[in-house]
Image (cartoon, rainbow over all chains, first blue to last red; front, side):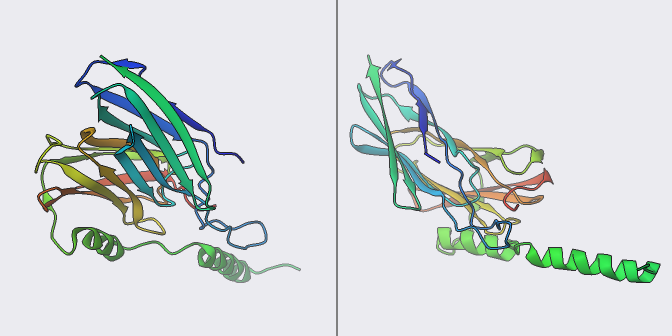
Length: 107
Length: 148
């Protein structure tokens, strides 16, 4: 199972506009509540943190519990202040960090 | 071997009791309130400028769309720092905590969550001036998620 991020950011925006960002990552979000066929608890393994930064400044983040659905999806909006790069990160319980970057041109 | 009706009933009850014992325990309203209280530092959140949006009935508890929006200028003292979502009928009450900044265009977000059964969802926002506001929604879940 590999976690694959998919993020949608508009390519352009006008200064001061509210920009809608949609971010999804394919991930099973194993809750730690399920049992396998032998009756043993399957250990928890979820994305525990999602962050969005713009030109290095924090914009939005979320701490996730196992109650977030598989393939965690977030929709949020950001002020378009200047052209630059959004950096998205997802932290996995197993220590992996998945990343994606999207550029926006603001005029 | 033939079974009398009484024996069959006892066996059926035993099987369902065993199945119940395997189910995870659910959080209670008290546990959900404790999570809210830890978030607010004991302060009682007021009803107000926050709206939590969930469907009245969710057919599939594995992916229930949830949105919230706090009316806020998102600058100065009128800024939402964070929003917590709590579920009182899941194995664990915590769902998610969202953090906003001055770069957020609105204190609003949408995600998809798991709900084990019909229950009440609570959203509490922490404002930059130290106040807390709350909204609650009851939701009916046809087929629960989480367990399996």
